[in-house]
Amino acid sequence: MNHKKLFRHLVYLVSMLLVVGALYGLSDVLYAQMADTGARPTAFPSSPRPDQICLTWSADPQRTQTVQWRSSTETTAGEVAFYPVEEGQEAQQQVQAIRTVLKDAGVVNDPTNHRYTAVLEGLSPGTRYNYCVGGEGGWSDWSEFVTAPEGTPSFSFVYMGDPQVGLDFWGELLHSAFERHPDAAFYTVAGDNVNRGHHRNEWDELFQAAAGVFDRRPYVPALGNHDYSRQRKPQMYLDLLALPEDGPVRIGPEHAYAFHYSNALFVVLDSNASIRIQGLWLEEQLKNTDALWKFVIFHHPAYSSKANRDNKAIREGWGAIFDAYHVDLALQGHDHGYLRTPPMYDGKKVDSPAEGTIYIVSVSGTKLYDVADLPHGEKILGKTSTYQHIDIRTEGENTLIYRAYTIEGEVVDEVIITK
Image (cartoon, rainbow, N blue to C red; front, top):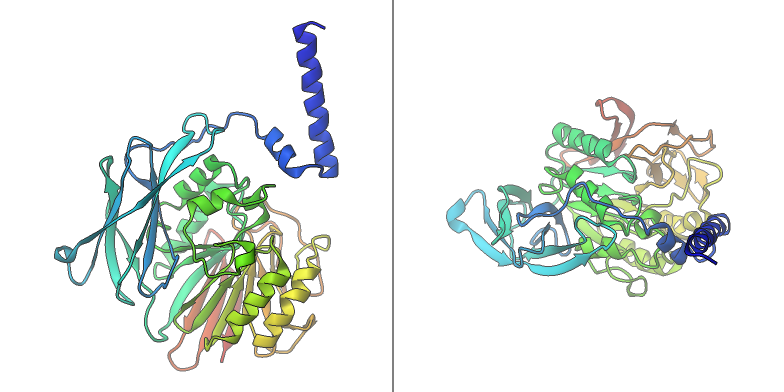
């Protein structure tokens, strides 16, 4: 057999294996590896100067701030300089960052770069800080962050469903949210942050689109199935982001976590992992808080916006815990449509938010699905990308004002809850 004929046979064999994998789900990891053999240049290669600056919380939001960024391999060390705005630059401090090497051989024009993480500790609650990052390769411009407050003052935050596809549009939506709500304390994303979680070039697109927002307000992500992208672990997500490690040990650190902000508890879950194991931990978080408002963020919805995307195990496993400890809002993604349920308790509609949990599904990218006219749909929108601004007011009556916005600023849904 000549070489050309042998090559044609090999191509045919690989093609047939890909077809079998696609049709029957055989060997997902092998299938993903075979499908990803092509070159994937990044549109945003690294340089010696720091970029992809991103705030997260990996510890107490009142007294710490985690800062991450990257550089090319030409830069080998980095640090954060910061100071409280009220005290001025004379109070400036520096913290050395931990450097890790991040590799993706498929990114042919930038296969290796350096990732830096610094945790700023001993901060004052409710305080605005200026900061910049850098090293021998150059320094960033000054940016800002604000620590979580003491007590229970009013605050707001932004929730978004899947970015995943159309990250340039998603960046415009993100920036429109930041322009309309500059005081929003943080941005939470309910999974499928990118389309292929093990492709670093897609994360490059996400961080490029988020520049000017995620370097000023913390990014609070949940894990979606595409963040795993057929891998056994969401390794790129874990390598890129420093998140709290207080979740259930048996599903791995940074998959699920919880934090308090003002008078609210936020619990982030990994709906790709064990529902039962996380349920035990979730119950402990809800049982041991005196927070007035309770929010849970996860990817696969308990109440779907399409009839063929049901997640009964989540609805029954976590829904019963939400019922027992009265979670106010469950913030979800995955279905690429918009849906808000009425207050639900034990799988049934109840009369008021005081009696049940409101479940929301939204999408913020450009991958959009049709929605179904389902009995649990109080508000349903198809082919609509939105962000949600949630305003918690503590003066007078405790009030939650929830609004869903399009990129043009149109309010397409609203709920007001008082306690």
